Structure formats: structure tokens, C-alpha cells
Image (cartoon, rainbow, N blue to C red; front, side, top):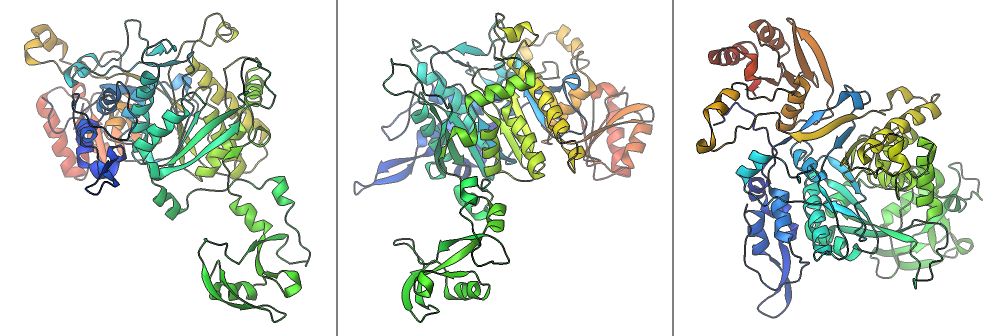
Amino acid sequence: MKSSNKLKMHSPNLVNSNIEKIAAIFPNCITERHDENGDLTKAVDFDLLRQELSQVLVEGEQERYRLDWVGKKEAILTANAPIAKTLRPCKEESVNFDKTENLFIEGDNLEALKLLQENYLGKVKMIYIDPPYNTGNDFIYEDDFTENTNVFFEKSNQVDEEGNRLIANTENNGRFHSDWLSMMYSRLKLARNLLKDDGLLFVSIDDNEIENIKKICCEVYGAGNFEAMVTWRRRHNQPNDKSKIIGRVAEYILVFAKDSQTLKKKGTFYGLPLSEDRIKDYKNPDNDPRGAWTTNPWKAAVGRGGTKYTITTPTGMIFNETWYGNLETFDNYKKEGRVYWTDNGNGFPRIKIYLSDAQNTGQVAINFMPHDKFGSNQEASAELKELFGKEGIFDNPKPIRLLKSLIKLSTSDSDIVMDFFAGSSTSAHAVMQLNIEDGGNRKFIMVQLPEEIDKKTEVFKVGYKTIAEISKERIRRAGKKIVEENSDKEGIEHLDIGFRSLKIDSTNMKDVYYTPDALKQADMLDLASNIKEDRTSEDLLFQVMLDWGLELSLPIERKIVAGKEVFFVAGNSLVACFDELTFDVVDEVAKDHPLRFVSAEKAIHLDHDKTNIKERFKQLSPDTEVKFL
């Protein structure tokens, strides 16, 4: 039995939290039904709502408008089920481990999303994913969370006998679409929780599942939060496949907001840099001291709203029309010299827009992104070849220009960008590149399964065994290249090109979730230390950070205090000591008045020492929260 001062050491059970947040977090439970007058109206799907709040499958169906498939309820159950996993730091694979604010998580992205629910709840500004397209040749995740919670904690693994999480999803699979939909549904559902209220989701997809993935997103995020379906021309050459009626040169990027109203209210979406063609539109025929300009109409288009009043032109022409802004605003524009009168003063007024202002705000993106401006698959492959010195490093990567544009549209300054189908980590590369270009301090969280590479490929022969290895190596090489190319740029020394490599593993704690009748005397002796022998102090520190809901990118400083190793996370936000805990250590640590202090039961000799240590903190630092593993 765990006491109140123990950390729970497993991911949060989302069923319980969903009960408290029904109205806010379940847009998928809104459907349509006929009212008493026979009209369609929005209604609550109580079957789905019951499923959201249950840890077992709920029966009972009604006909309604929705996307359905075999396994949908299991996907909801999968998303909500807790797991007994942790993230183990791997310093030797990291870059600038102690100071970087970027994360690379190696493991199943479903488990990663579960583990990050408390630490990054509502903190991620942009999520971009490029999932398997379900072409019949892809591998997808095999999720099996149908056991009850006790079995989860007992096993804490969801893998086959060989440790595999991926299965081939061929077109002759009777659940070809269903398995793919289930995989995506649970992940998109968990991802929504991580987005800020003004956050944006971008999903790359092709023709195979575009209709289905849009319906899933409409259900999970709400149809009213659909922003756009962008068409990206991914290849510049003309296909010559005579077996097809129409050659496929495009892919799609679905864009959904967490909350469109909040996004619009905050205005935290941004324009793209002006194109060369657009810049050419700006002239300065009147030698305006504010520089080149173009104009926008002041007369409102039909059906666009506005305010009606009378305007008199310099030549005495009178127009009683509906205008985009009120009269006071127009008068201010006149005083500022920003009104341009058409037809030599006899026509409608237009308002000057200056190039300098337009370059600051950028231009609105459109839902077509051609390869010449946003990059192509061929360009992306060339970028990888330049970094690695070899061709064929990764199949169908995305170009940096495309990802930079999406990130620039949706983020600024120190926002967090997440990609949980990281692949070759183009997203991380784009974040670093954009930061050096505009002075931002964006952070990234990449998640990639250590998917094995075919042993017959050249990539495997040169030493890369998994996709995750390629992904991490790309970040290392890209960061080094960016620094070398911008060595003379102001602030380059502050550019974060590092990342903390974290790997998903079973909990650091020995299995203490046995039922009483399954616990043997030998097990009780083994549990004299409740921490697995192969786990380090840093392993324990990161599990504590997970459990306490702290961001995993916080700075970590190691100090020797009274001869013992002590970790200070974000100053005094969290202090941890897993060495033998003495009162000398406690006295020194208490001087810093930490918000939280954690140690392990193995670090104390006697049970009453734990009570004495907590009392000591009460005397010296009464606001410190003290817990033991």
C-alpha cells in the first residue's frame, strides 16, 4: 500500500481526469440527432461518453452520423489506460545534456504521449506529424491494451515475444483501415491534451486516408476547429506512369486548431515572408518618406460588413458607401498621409500598406504550397545526402523549407514544437534553422520508435541499426552545420543545438503491484529495496520529474553536498539525493529552501529516519514538499 508521501511512479489514469473535464475535453462526444420537429441538432453521444469514462468496453449502439470502425472503442480504452513506464536519460547519445531544452524520446509514441500528459499538458504550441500513410506497404503500431489495470502494472510491456511494436498492414488485412484508424485515433486524442489553447496540429497525409484522418480530427478536435487542408506539390518532375489516369504529385497537410476562437482572439498565428513577386508590387511613386507601398481598398465588398457614411474626395466628389472602417479611423489615415485617391482624386479612396510593415507581419499563407517555394521530396533527399554524404538515408523525407514554413506560421519566440512520428527529424532541423534565422528560442520534442533498418541496405551497413539512430544523428550533424555556417552571426553562442536523449523503459521500481495471494515470501525479501538494481540516480531523477509533472527540459545541476551527490533541477524547484541521506545533507539542502525534495527509502537506514528527516525539513524549510521513492 502506498502512503501519501510516495510518488505514484506510473503515467496518469486519464479516465479519472476525463470525468472531471467532460465538457471541455470531449468534442468527439458531440454528434447530431433529430429533434422533436425533425430537424438535425447537436447532441451528446452518451455511448461514447460512457466509453470515455470506463476502463472496460461499453456495449450499446445507436444509428448516428459519425465515422465508425471495428476497434474504435478499444482505441479509446487504449488512450485512457495507464502504463507503468518511465523515461531513462542517455547522456552519451545526447548533446549539451544538462543545459539543452530540446528532447528526443526513443520509444513507442503512444507511451511517450501518455508519459508526457502531466508534464506538458497545454504547453505545446505546434504539433506536426508525418505518420504512415497506410499505402499497403507501411508498418503500423500494434496496440493491445485490453488487459485490466492490474495486468498492465504486472507486465508493463505491450510487445510481442521479440519485443516488436510494429506490424505490416497489408491490403489483404481484413482490418486494413480499422487498424490504421485505431492507431491514429488514440494518438491524436492524447496529443490534443498537450496542445496549448491556441495551439495548432499539422498532419501530413496522402490520398489513401485523407478522408478518414480528417473525420477523426473533426471528431477529436471538433469540426469547428478545422482550419485548412493544404495541398503541397511534393515532386517537381512530371510522372510518366501510364498505368494511372492521373499522376500523383501532391500530398496534403491537415491543419486543426485546439480552439479556433482562442487562436483568433490571441492572434498567435503568423504570416510567411513576402515572396519576391509580392515585394515587386510595392512602389513609391510619391516619394513617401516611409518607403515603398501598395494599397488596400477602403470600400467594403458586398456582404463583407463595414460602416456606412459619407466621404468627400479632394475634388469634391461625394460617396455615401459602406467602408471597411469607421470615419474616425479614416480621418486618422488622412492625417497620416496614408490615403490614396484613385482616378486623380475622383475615385474611391484606398489605404497605403507599407513594405516595411508588411515584412514585419508577413503575408497570409494559402492552401496550396508549390515545390518551388516550399521544397520537394527530391530536395529533402538531397538535404540528407549533404548531411550524411550518402544517398538513400531515409525514404520520403520532408524538406526543411516546408517544415520551416509551417513552424513559422504557428510559433514564435520560445514555443514548443512536437513531432511524435519524427522519422529523420526534419522538424528538429527546421526548428534550429528557423531559430538562427529569426532569433527565436523555440524548443522541440521528437519521438521516434527504434524501428529496425533492413540489414540489406547501405544505411545499415554503414552502422545505423534503427530509424531512431538516424534521427538523432541528423540533429547532431544539422546543429553542427548550422553553427559552422553562422559562426559570425550575433547570438550564435546561445543557439540551442542540443537535445536530451530519453528512452522509454519499464518503471524503475520493482513490481510492487502483486495481489496479496500472488506475493511469496521470496518476493518480500527481494523487495527490501524497491528500486531495480540496474537503475541509476539519473534514472530515478527523471521518473520523479515525470511524476511531479515537471518539464523534462529543465536545467539540471549536480553538486556534492556533505560528500553526497545532490541534483538541483531549475535552481531549487526540485532537489534530489539518492545517495545515503544524512542530516548534514538535509541541513545544507534546507538552506536553499527547495520547493520539493525527494530521496529513496534505500538511502535511509531505519524507518523512523524518514520521519525525522521530514520533521527536520519542517523546522528548517517548512514550505518544502518531501517525498520518498
